[in-house]
Image (cartoon, rainbow, N blue to C red; front, top):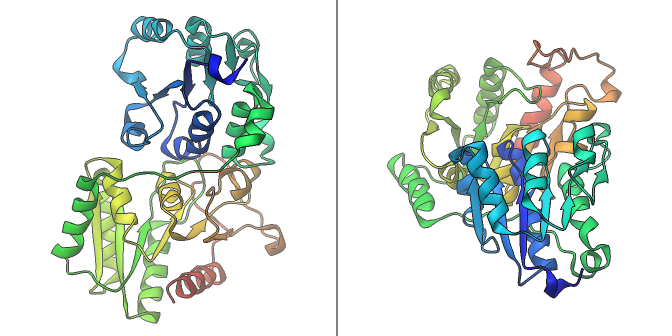
Length: 346
């Protein structure tokens, strides 16, 4: 199919924030390959703020705002030439079929996906041999490999609005924060192992005492404010603050953008920091499906990964669903994190 023949493209990514952020390079490449096409993105409501500012996206559908039938009608009426599912489930497979698109591209992993995507790509993502962003890009490349290779460029940038910048500036001014800033997001949605609140408290206390020239902002969602304030109280130092976000996710991004260094686990805010080009210290598991190879930050070389159960340490980690915290975390890992933060703050 010739470039000029492609008039309308739908790209779907309807899962978590981190997954969405690792899809931005695919949105960008779709635009580079088809500069004159109208591109529609399907996302969850909580990801809308991130994609609405991407200058190369024409239209966004928040799928939570529609009934199943309304969504099907909306997709069908768009008359897409290409439908790309970067993440697939039964609902998205059905939408692909309903779209009537000549090219329906998606990962082939379930039986129902075989019947939904006539340009499917066999992907065993659970093998985790590459980054999630690369798996996504493989689907974009499937449309026209030659054209893809000709114009290939990695772009994972996100865009803040002035109101997000203003929120961050007002917070910084109100608390009289200056100099070097460590922003930390200690909380996880449960998709990967992490360290406990008390362990975060202790390591933040140690980096603060080693570097008296820094301020620490514990950034979180408003629902985690009580936990964050407990960590703050436990640190027991002056220049430590809590930013509990109850507005746009880009307000959180505005605070992260103020960081000299960002600290966090394998979660959405870490990928926000990556998209903003920040220096990052990230705590990740060694498990294949949670490892940085699969879920690491894309397009940012300023990331130091700390893996408590990496092979050379010869520790056995329990990966049952009930065990959310590293049993392999100890004083040596704490020191490794503090040293990495100290180096990044210089």
